[in-house]
Image (cartoon, rainbow, N blue to C red; front, side, top):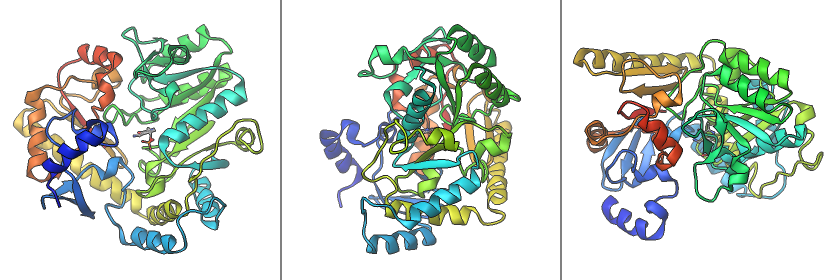
Length: 420
Ligand code: PMP
């Protein structure tokens, strides 16, 4: 097999940046991506035979590690029965029941194939149900790459949306309001400035895409109250937090009931599955019952559902989250202690099995504090890790080349951040 360098050279001629998703190109951290040959448990092995401890877990889905035996068995069995039918299966019913049991606000749900699809569809339901066009999201929260959601704040913070990507019509981006995470006053101001016009507020209840930034005390409860008062729906994007911060996700942890929830990552156990859902009344708006159209050739795919079910059943076992939490705490405590010893300005935070680290003395509470410019001095240790046997995570995604992100970065101290 060709080595990573040779593969990357060919790949760059065939795919933008040589990859099928921008962060894999290592642009945020520098260096050349390695190409993976296989993985098992916590270890990932590249085509050059180097073995790494994998802190990435495929960006979240692999809560059980690589190639967990029950998942491999379930997938192998499923694939022998056929890979896709375009017709419903018992597995989808079991999966929907399991998700509803864990996340009771999802009285009714739809399986889709990615987190992007889940968030995009939840927004459509919200707009369809309320008859309103505006949505409100938070700076630094990522909800996939649907047009309405590829919008962060301009440098003024709470303002009309400016697209983060070429190709997003500005007329559509203008319907996306953005405010700083953890800033309830800014939310209030926007809802008051757009009376009866905001369909939904969408939030990562624990922000995972700007490192790991937990909600400030009262923030999620405040969002619930404000949205209810203004007739807007509250959407929790639990694509990362779902089955990660606890069995019932962030909504169970913080005791806040959103109207709609998006899931992804872990519920597919490493295969493409997402889900969105909410109250029966809201979800009955979805086709074929209602006028909100949403569909998918591979939605609820039997092989993907088999992987998801096998994963969720293991996660459901007593003590799983206690163990996950304890392991994560041990890692984070160790990192903080090591940094303290060396005098490096550093802080690591975790919520359940989610953790992130920042090269600053205290964790940030918003995007402006977390979006810190990458410089080569700080980046080099990251590359060093890649070279010597661990695979870390840098959430400085390709979108950071966008004007809005650059503006936020230029307002912040210099550093880079890791999270998972
Ligand atoms: N929502 C959140 C919170 C995410 O972190 C992501 C992806 N990292 C998405 C949505 C989009 O999911 P996907 O990449 O599966 O489309």
